[in-house]
Image (cartoon, helix red, strand yellow):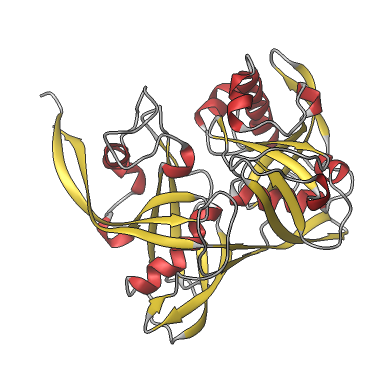
Length: 385
């Protein structure tokens, strides 16, 4: 019997978190194995879409707005909430559960309060969120008034118009989120043998999400290019994809290059350069004196319009590790790291320590904003016999 589409709906809230947007779902409304819900998630977001626009679903054509978050009250004594992040691949018919989304983390606690998943008193609130993808704990701090999250405030973040109430995210012991080790290969820099490119020097670091950092200059770039300019360089994204695959195998994320091609969320590819004056997507100039590092990140195969939050945390951690390519490029600072990126300047703080077993990431911190955009039900078609 030929499979046929069966329509359905899922209760959902559509929210912005940081510089991302996602469908927010209750775990109770998604019974069974999340992977078994892949057809419904793909339909809701409109993937695969060879046109890359997702006009027939809730997705927005790029990875940062093709996301789903599944939340429930946690049974773990150390956590208040469990949060599973689902990356819906835009042009391919699959989902990726391999990593975390730090930007959408900003929306998880507020969603839980507004939906009644947790009971809190008015005033400053701190919730402990367990990310099931990386098995890491994050503390989210924000304000509540009259039993509801406060969203209006004066904090502006690069890449988002307007201002909002600050949401503090503290990643607790973020090292090894993907691979189990802060330095998955045991060294701070190494040479990757990349098919079609040859040797490429890289730093492989895993904090909040696994990342491979390379010098922009080693790829003939200044590091100040905006996303469209990176996409316009002939063959560049293919070369970066091969670097990502080689790093994935070296880090133990994938057993071989073929398997690495199927795991699109991690590792992120970070292009690093010293502090430099650059343009931004808003048209404003980023002054070299106002940043400590210049960076661009490739996320799910395309240049990110800002920086993924977890990749920024990994940058901040790597900048504190002597000998890494990020440490080499960054201006020495004892304060939070100011990263020049396509949408302006993003600041992240991190603390690392060195002990007998090597480097250890103690924490990483950010401020983000969030906003609910819609509450209702999302339509989907799933295949049934």
